[in-house]
Image 1 (cartoon, rainbow, N blue to C red):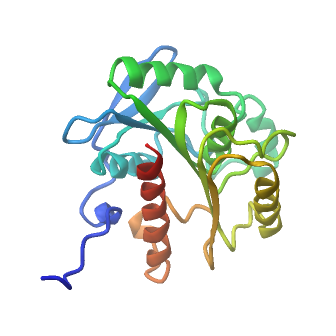
Image 2: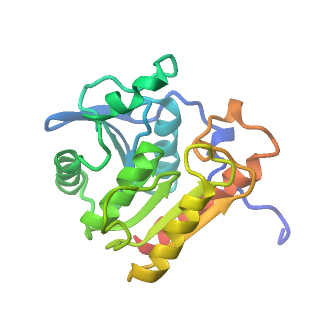
Length: 245
């Protein structure tokens, strides 16, 4: 029927468990969770973890969602075996913990994963999606790696690099209006500076009422009132990747 509702490409959460559909593999000096679509694809997305690490079910679920939409998805361990942050950790020690886990010090791991998806998976079109810490890392990749054809940075901003607005890859930035980690004035400043300095396509989108972590929240943690925003943000992510890859 013409008026029949089509399933949202990000509705996979209603049909799938968080156990993970992929497998863990060794990629040179680090490990990664890799999941492939049911049919062959030459498109790969590097999915970049938040502070809770590459094994967080939420992040692997995002990779599974990408694979269900036709992408090879790789979630590397960007901490290379070092302990991820834990909710039980003392937040006063966070900056100390972050010292040897900087999201702008990941070239060695990115280079290894790029070799892997190209040589082992046959990828010819490569994108990146990252959450929180990984959102910052995705912003960094957009500055450093023009071969990455599309980036989606979800609640992450580089704050310290002078050239942080001169993107080399088309990038979608997604934020929540009520994010206590990234105040709205930082989002507004990012958008203004990108408008002034960026020469590639970009979009900055803020979701009203949403908090940090909303896009990759597990379905049992989703308030029904938030579900439309979460689905819209996930669809935006897929549309951005589809457009540039």
